[in-house]
Image 1 (cartoon, rainbow, N blue to C red):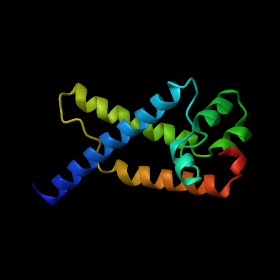
Image 2: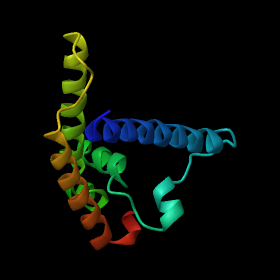
Image 3: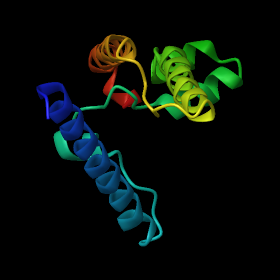
Image 4: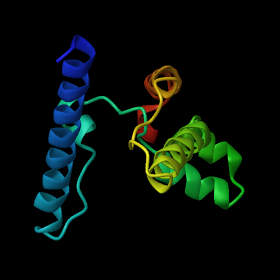
Length: 128
């Protein structure tokens, strides 16, 4: 197995483990009749780059752009990149090709999430 093959396998295993942990987190709290707190915020005390994303989109749909930007100024780019990533993935599946997202998406994701995180850290903790 090549280095890139091992790296891809490691990322796949990490992704599956992270998804399992996230689902377990939600299940733990939902079984107690409560919505879960954000895992990253609970563990580190810092917001994740996507913190406030849902509230930001709700404000945007209500035409409250100012509040939307306070909750998460990169909500729209994050959602657009997510939709593009899923679209690419499902298009490959529909064409009976390997289900993979091209490597060109990685720098886009890293940049958008880094800028979103910086914006959250520089913003008011009230909107975490």
